[in-house]
Length: 214
Length: 341
Picture 1 (cartoon, rainbow over the protein chains, first blue to last red):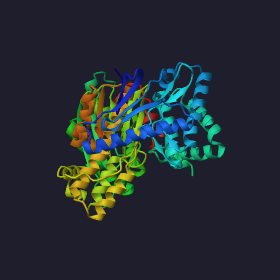
Picture 2: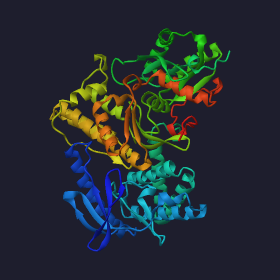
Picture 3: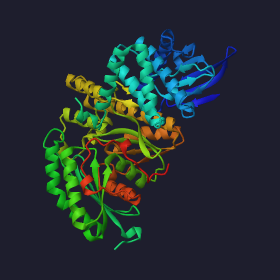
Picture 4: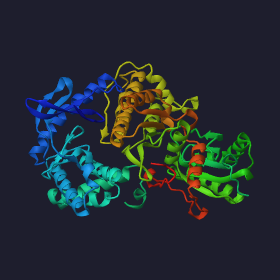
């Protein structure tokens, strides 16, 4: 059963070996040349599987992988019960929102401490389970890297996701994320990454701040 | 005397953010009566802001009078003056703003400062009838994926460095082409790409919803200088990779926002390959694909005039002492009360 038609992959809820599983199938994109398409899909399938595993080692809940089928660009993984953070965030009290954002920041911190960047940190890619665990999904654009720049890009994406989808609470949420992040990676590293975020924003086009600082 | 018939009220819009000086005249129903564009073409290299501004100052009077002639109305018939207040190149914006202030003061009619990026979206909506679209706005200075939400056009993805149009322009210049030959750089690359057969390896850089084109440009210029590939193949590969990135991000925004149409606007919108890719995506998501007509794809005065009308109808005017240009005015900073959503 198709449960989510995403931009690059479709998620199917299936029975597999007596389990409820999610099949994530990266579908061919007709708009791009097959040669480009196959390369991107295979690359993202392999890397996503690896990163889901690395993330677990870093202490960030992710779905368990049961099988990877490269010929089909298909990953079979655990079905995680719960709701997307995107769906619940606006209904939370300010205090709960703060706590959740703080926890998300901690999880991002754990990823970054283990040199993992997620690559697509949005509130749709985080699932809040009934036991209040936050599970990160969709590492399709993720990377294993030591580059400070990409950590900055990662958090910048998170900020942008708040601004575009939860603009009313964007500021308080992102502030809480940064606090949680700093608790895990340490104040010094957090400052460095924060500096990167500002640099990325200045580099972005038409930001008035670029003219007035540095 | 205040006229109430919308077809008898007119807005004159002035666009001068970069290399174009353009004047458009529309009636308040959205009928375009004139849209005169005068493009500054540099002797060599890119746009030098001061040289472009000098061009604008030189042609402004002539373009304005041509627009009146074409529209068949007199200056006293105009109800409001709209101008592109930003974002853009400082000297160019100031020249446009100066001519707008002069007209507004002389005719004693309201002035409306318009955001250039909003104008590209609004003219696309007016010309195509697109309703609440995800917009891909691609030009020499901007690469933005946007959708309307809660009073403003929100930016869902954009370039982290250079614009796609800039990327194509610089490559064409590096390959030895000259705009004086009468064809825009983007069109030259598009034409050569049609003869391309072999896909060469180039970096594909999508970071979430954002894109980066500077690494792609560096890589393709390096291959060009190596002289190991046909120019046609490089143009083909550059287009395929860059447009796949744009299309991927647009598709992500479409899926994320759950909207039902895609609008392609800005100077690069004229590219047939990019149009074809987005058409495919629209089909797959049961959405409508709309592309801005050619005459409104490049920077033009008509889009400024139309956006000025929309804002003015919602009581927005810009007093002369607040009409300073805003070089880095972001799309998402603009309140757009005229949009239903």
